[in-house]
Each structure stands twice: as structure tokens, then as C-alpha cells.
Length: 414
Image (tube, rainbow, N blue to C red; front, side):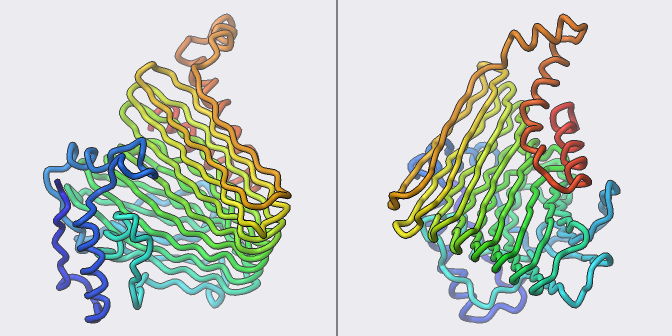
């Protein structure tokens, strides 16, 4: 069992005795519980501990290795940028914005609390986190151009685990299009364990896009805690195909009237890919909406899991919540698991959930083949048509074209 990770305080800067104590307490909790297994309800379809044991003979914490920011910038459209190398904030550029309205710094939490003690990966993150960023957008400021987070991993992470934290704060009446773009050049297995906290203020809008830019040997776990104020909007679009393992775990408090949350995903899983999305949407105030649509296409030996829970508090009347997962399995060896849940304590609500899975329609494939298209090309065309629905509602045309381009690269090969 790989659980005893050495906490090297000497390489962690600006650590107070109090913070050191909290870190050591969190590491102790992790070493007691270990990596998650199927015994936990939120991991019932995945034995992550076994996955780690099968792919790592040893495991070291990152401890800030040599960093190189020689990455290739996206040229599809003008944008601002933040560069993270191996999880560490390296550089940034906001030439399209009023810099006085933006506050960016390296994440440096004064006190790490034992949050989510039931989640051993968060305990591990609390114990060993390095780097990450804290971004704050001033009240009444709307970004003129998108912001791309270049999350790049180098070829020096063999058998290493990166733990970092990010904080995003939008004050009232702020607006931001944010693209997290993950790339790496690693030839070796590594783990990326991220904890991101998002605060969306009164009347503010965050449109978030998560994109995997290349195939990767990475094993990713991302926990997102998001809080929405009155009349705020959080839109999340996920295209993360190409990873060995990826789990995005979102816990969202819809904590202001007229707030709106949308989570959508288009996943194309190739051989041996394993992707999971877990959401908990907590409707805590009246007159709020949430919309979730998760679409997945699975090829040989790939696996996908969607666990989505909608919680409606007793005072959250007039809630409108929708949840749907759909999967196409292209091979008998592929696997899709879904666990939709509703927990409702209000009586004047509109809530629905559903899940479907099955093989691709042979009549549709045959129709395209009669038009001179090969079977393989027909399947690719139908795959794109199935997944592209997720991108259709993106209002920014530059981002929409970019996301379509990345979806194509995932379907047709990086």
C-alpha cells in the first residue's frame, strides 16, 4: 500500500508552526485512510487505491522541481494567460485588461483547515499542497478577453504526486470566461491532486471551460467547491479526454435567489481511459435553476462514471433542476456507470433526472455507408454529432470554434 508519504517541511516556504501542525494532522489522517476504495459510496465504481498500486511502485511528493515555461501558446484568439508549471504559478499576462481590477498571487493559505475530513485526497492536498494561484476580479469588472490557465506538466514527474490549490473570486457584477488548458510532455505516470475554491458574487458570471490538450499519462483528481450568490451564474463545460484517469468532483452551493448553475461535458474515451464526473448541487435558496448534461462515447476497454446528486433544501421553493447522462458504447469491453440522485425537502419544485446508455444506431451507420463513407468514418461522424450538442450553446464564437477544434483532435486523434 502506498500511503506513507514523507512531508518535507524544509522545502515548503513560509510555513508557520501552526500550519506545520495542521499539515501533519492532515497527513496522519490520509495515512490512516489511504487512497479511496470501492467501500466509499462516492467511489463505489472505482478502486482508486488499486489503480495507484497497479501503476506506481513508489510515490513522492512534488517539492518544486526545476521549472521551464517553454510552452506553446494558443494562437486561435487573443487572450490573457496564467502559466502553471507542475502546479506552480510561473507567470501571467493581462495585456487586454485593466490590471488594477485584477489581483493575482500565488496561493498561500494562512491556515489550512481540516475540510472534508471524509475525503482522504483533500486531506492529502491539505498536507502537501504547493503552488497554485489566487485570482480576484474586482466588483463591476468584466474581462474583455478570455483568460487561459496553461496548466503544464514537465517530463520530471516520474512517480510523483502534485498537490496544489486554487482560489477564484468574482466580486459583485464581475464577469470572466476562463479556460483551463491542460498539457504535458511526461513519458511517465504522475498524479495531479487539485483543490479549487470558487466564490461567485452578486450578479456575477463565470464561464469555465476545462480542456485536455494532449494525451497524458497523468492520473487527475480535481475537487471543486463553488459558492453562488444572488443572481450569479456558473457555467462549466468539460472536455478532458486522453487521460489515464480523471475524476472531477464538484460540490456547489447555490446560495442566492435567481442563481443559475450549468454543468455539461463531452467525453470521448479511447482505449484504457477512465473518466469520472461527480456532482452535488445544493439548492439552498428559492427560485434557482440548475442544468446538467453529461455525454460520453466509449471505445475499447474504457470506463466512464457519472454520479450526480441534486439536493433541495426545504426553503428552496421554485427550484428548477435538470440532470441527464447519455452514453454510447462502441465496444462490449467498454463500461458506463451512472448514479443519479434526488434529495428534495421542498414541495414546490421541478426536478428531473435520467440516464441512458447503449450502442450506436446501426441504421445510421448503414445510411452513411451507402453514401460512400467507410464504417470507421461514419462512426466518427456520428460520434462528433452526438458530442457536439454540448458545444452548441457556447455564446463566444471564438471559444466555440476552439472547443470544436479540440473535440475533433480527441475524436480523430491528437
